[in-house]
Image 1 (cartoon, one colour):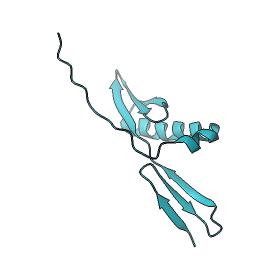
Image 2 (spheres, rainbow, N blue to C red; image 1 turned 60 degrees about the horizontal axis):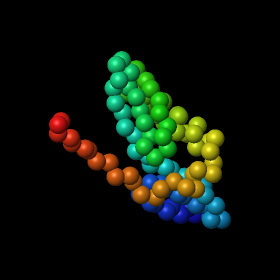
Image 3 (cartoon, rainbow, N blue to C red; image 1 turned 180 degrees about the horizontal axis):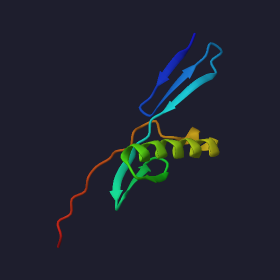
Image 4 (tube, rainbow, N blue to C red; image 1 turned 120 degrees about the horizontal axis):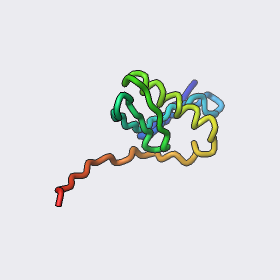
Length: 94
């Protein structure tokens, strides 16, 4: 029997011995175009990558975040449970 616990940012699935069976994280990514390249940034982790298409940069950011989390296992325990607040800023030129 598996039990799931869901938060805004991740989903934990436990097995019958109450050990984590699976963990699904949710991160915010921002994709922008700079010249011929698309640039993807993971807001929460600061991971950045590029790709020639949106599909390629989405694949690259997923891979980059997975590698980041594999290499920094302690940082997983400090991930925010809440989604970041993303806003826009308007400035009038003076």
